[in-house]
Amino acid sequence: MISRRKVLQGVAAVGGLAAVPMPTAIAQSPASIRTLTARMGEVRLLEPGEPMTPVWGYDGLVPGPEIRVKQGGAVAVDLLNKLPQPTTIHWHGIRNDNAMDGVAGLTQPAVKPGETFAYRFTPPDAGTYWYHPHNRTWEQMARGLYGALVVEEPTPPAADQDLVLVFDDWRLGRDGKIDEASFGAMHDIAHAGRLGNILTLNGQFEKDLEVQAGQRLRLRLINSANARVMGIVFDGHAPIVIALDGQPLEVPFAPDRNRVVLAPAQRADIILDCSGDPGQAGDILVETGRERLRMGKLRYHPTKRQRSKVLADIPVLPPNPMPTTLEVDSAKITKVDLVMSGGAMSGFDSAIYQGKPYGIRELVRAHNKAWAFNGIVDMTKEPLKAIERGATVHVRMVNQTAWPHAMHFHGHHVKEIAHSRRKPQPYWRDTVLMQRGEEVTVAFKADNPGKWMLHCHMLEHQAGGMSTWYKVS
Image (cartoon, rainbow, N blue to C red; front, side, top):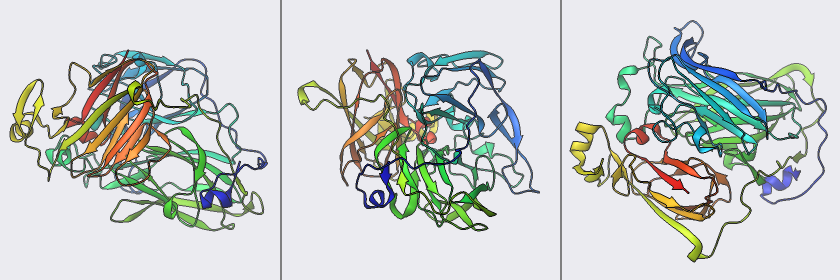
């Protein structure tokens, strides 16, 4: 446990475990095989009285069913595809067996309509993860195809409620339907990505959380948007971040201005103590860069109080089996450069696509491509880098574009070791947000063999050329 006062000061400390009476019981997913059916559905994304929205969802739901297992427990899911397109499931953030990573064309064939694919794996790490397709991801996720995967610690920290909050945005027409005509629009590809006009929390226009004064909440925040970076605020409350992208923090921290910033695909576990009084309410807000939007409220019970005052200590989660050290001898380090170019308002004039050079106008008009890594557009037959298993890898990422990018590594978590604008953050992440003009070097231990994708999780950027792969022997 860490003292709240010292968390707020950014100083580590060790204290006693605060006793939390009667923590909320969390239902475990059944040990038997479960089927997730990717199919059409209809949900209410708008205010009551407004039209329902046709979606694609796992079991027709948005988000899809929440899957929970204990660390060391098996996930056994059969994907049944009842969509009109081939699809897959990628288990985002899981350091998975390569055959179970769910990337169509790289780790498995896409699952055709009417077919089934069996996913069987044991997550090595506790934490907050999620699942989504990896075939036409930019369209299928924008239609609602995603869900949460929670891997619980053997002994989770005491909390009165353990809740998953999935934030998303949607581009809807006046009829409440998804704007299908804009899928693959070059403006989105070449700019910030597909930004919606409606934000939802757990698939609802507004989602209220029922709490009691003095309660401790563990909230698992997931940004499932195609492209929008979100700043999440619980008005009048002070969150403490205890995990990022599923990996525990050695020293939890209080985010700047109590604002938890998540790029697309990123997650954060926070401790939120309900410091208000019975009958009060506090807004759940998302800052989009231009405005603050209310996503719901923390609604306090009018009379009940869990405890007389909030708890003083913050739990430190047990570590996952991550590498404890990274090689520092430069002679033993595999170095990779990844230079990002393209998009609107840049000097991008040509690149290699499918082995041939193209000018930017032809790439845009004939192939709907606008981005490149190291001057190469899209996936290639040969990997960006072939890496020997066990090597320490340094990836120097340079953003020469006018736009931010959320760089997602499959199969591994990475840690910043150099940053052009600030001190590197000492956190394991699977998705790294890079701002325009930044240069960031990350390191990881290549201990998971297979073919692993590396791409921008602003999904229109990925579709427009920002995807590659690396191979660990």
